[in-house]
Length: 370
Ligand SMILES: Cc1cc2nc3c(=O)[nH]c(=O)nc-3n(C[C@H](O)[C@H](O)[C@H](O)COP(=O)(O)OP(=O)(O)OC[C@H]3O[C@@H](n4cnc5c(N)ncnc54)[C@H](O)[C@@H]3O)c2cc1C
Image (cartoon, rainbow, N blue to C red; front, side):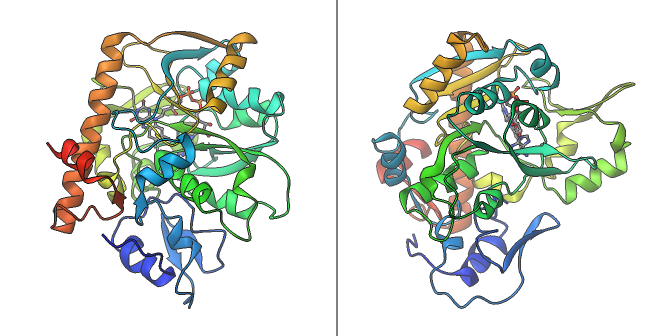
């Protein structure tokens, strides 16, 4: 495996042009040459640096999993299907307005609003669905603004560009709602802090979303335009299995598409992603199979635990145990994603010892491949 930090040209040759880019945004905003355009990152001009932050923080360049796990959790990369965890439970908001607008239980929106209200963070970087239904990253400073981001947009959005754009000398603290690839890039930044950007230490909270795959902001958007009267759509949903469909809600009812029709718009890099539950977040949130209107919540760090305790104590979230059969199924799905991704990676590299970007211990790689 190639562990060297390289430059922009190699990022283009090894990641972007090889369909491995996750569109996380870690390489844009910090550099004048790389910009998101029509669902891709494009290079506007040649950069001559032999080592670049764009390459260093990319979640698809070599990542020493033990080292970054040490950075966040103080222990090597966990062998557990869900990564390092303190507690797994279910939760939902107690706020009617949040529940009305949120994707499921509104746990993400509730936790972010609370973190802002309590001064744990001054700003939140999150995603909202714009008028034309494309996802855009934005900064929120109040509960009202956080509410604008409620709901899921299944197209990938380069939100880390917003972190890179943040005023370098600012002492504002930040919370970020991140996909697994974005939480990974942020952890690489924590391990070796970037220069010429707001300090990574200002990122006080990362709320990760579960993710099986994300959709192309180009191809999938064309599909939506051709098949829906987009201005009338109020919400998108991919309900948990066994639903197997993509739903678009409109005032006159729900329009459903078989998931098979949608899956072809998955961004190719998702096939090489091992992480279903945002393993490097402070707290990770997803749906709950068979329990509508609730979220599965994985608490991973002291920061996550403190925020969750505060949400319960202030009556902002209702919580309950995750039924054992749900936990077993979640672990099974997470493990399947790891196994599938490793097999795809080896198919691509042609060598069982070359896991491209994944720096796993050989023992764990063997265990996952067994
Ligand atoms: C691409 C994608 C794939 C997902 N896949 C799964 C899955 O396989 N299994 C599962 O259990 N859950 C998945 N989720 C998470 C799920 O859809 C909910 O976001 C999660 O359960 C939180 O629910 P909530 O009610 O707390 O959300 P809310 O309180 O409504 O908050 C949702 C948050 O998601 C953020 N967000 C919306 N779209 C994006 C985006 N494109 N990129 C980054 N952030 C975004 C919003 O800014 C908001 O803060 C996925 C989400 C996305 C965006």
